[in-house]
Image 1: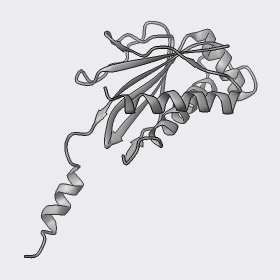
Image 2: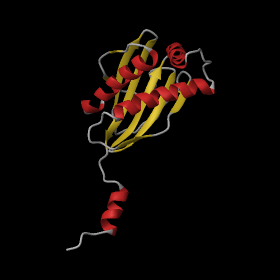
Image 3: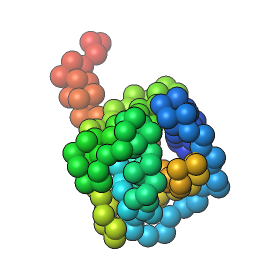
Image 4: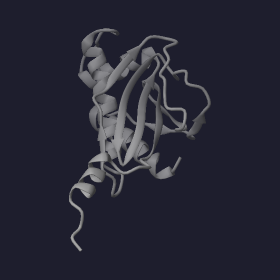
Length: 170
């Protein structure tokens, strides 16, 4: 995977966590993930489309997720409640949105986030996209960003239709 897709996520998580929670993030060496099992118990997932396609997962152990959400919301929240899931979804949204803004000359959209809570959950992913894990450490615990994105390889159907519907005049 092109490092230009990894660096924005590193900058974004450091920015979001320091700005929103005054929480410093130390980034360890990224690595390619071999299996599809989640790194931790809580996963916030966002899809990416446009010039870049794939998905991003913010993965946290339960205790870290509880601590991070409490800092983010300003009060403790029960694991498994809609507000807890919304907070995790908003964090992955902010990290992914910040990263996509740093993709130079790329038009990228992100989906609404989904959140999965519970040990041993499985997140299926496209087999043709490698997963790069960015391990991060905070005072609240470990946080992993799993980045599974690639450049779009085909032109969009809208461009194809527009080109055939309005051919250039000779």
